[in-house]
Image (cartoon, rainbow, N blue to C red):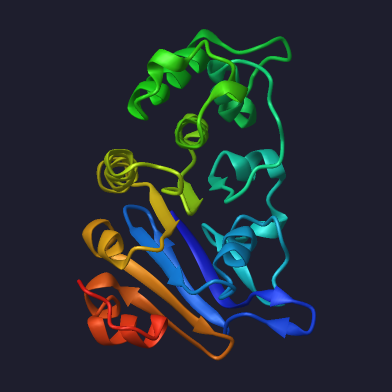
Length: 242
């Protein structure tokens, strides 16, 4: 399984955010995406998930252009955690997390027992199983973020695209969530790409990295060669302790 960027140009009409990008996320890999504000990280995630068209190039999913794959089939293979979610949901946390099964739904009349079982498992995985019957609207920012992660885990795609998955989380739950997705990559051969702001977490958890320097420069490859002190200092403009 592969999710491939081929000479991919991301940005807006008349404004390119990064140079043409070519890289491949393979099953079992965990990628970190790092860059300053406005460097194109979120836009790249949207393009990889086929929510936004690139300015040039193409995204391939297992050898086929992702734009040619029907939305439901695509959602079974690629899951995206958005950085922001405007939609309000007034049901319970469990109801919300069950929405992750929507691409897999076999009936028009609700969820299968296995869907709810999987949703409860992922709530426990994110350490909020005790909140399953709470209204989602009553959760704190960190609890809601963990519910959002549980929803994506319940979706169970082959590739996870995570735009700032650790935002709002305390340190314990940052480490829990990061380790969860690393385990999915290593133990279940999922492909993972995470937008992160802490290079130390990227070095600890990811085996590949993409650095977005600006419209004319980027660097992608194994984390051991990409996430060096000199590369990170060039990225952020300050010395980065590792």
